[in-house]
Figure 1 (cartoon, helix red, strand yellow):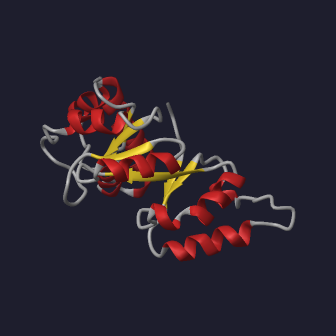
Figure 2: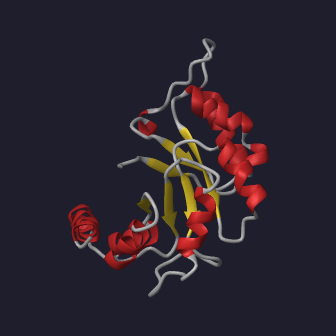
Length: 178
């Protein structure tokens, strides 16, 4: 499964205002060129309770709004979140901050089983996924892995002219070792 998703940082109210500006009188949302080809958006600080307007605008544009669930999310909240979700569920693999780690949390399979009880949507795991071994571990229990920090670190470590080739090689290595 390949999905193009953009994570938007900052004030979610600004993102909703931007989406409203894209809406035209016919109720059709037209995406700017830089958003074409995407399947969805992640707006990390957007609470599900305040997502209705944004979600409606995105759905009108044919895009999914991706929601997070964490190991600390209570079951009732998971049920609410997956009831609003489309595309996939972003399952946070740990508590704490994002970034590369040596080992994944031992409780991850149980957490994913708990989330799966509430939805048939694909479960994609992110936060701390940085190696082929992590991707293999996640792949045994989830539908996908997100390697954002590891990929960004790889790209930033390379000279500008080597970034595309380096990112491609890094992602291929994650995939081919599994």
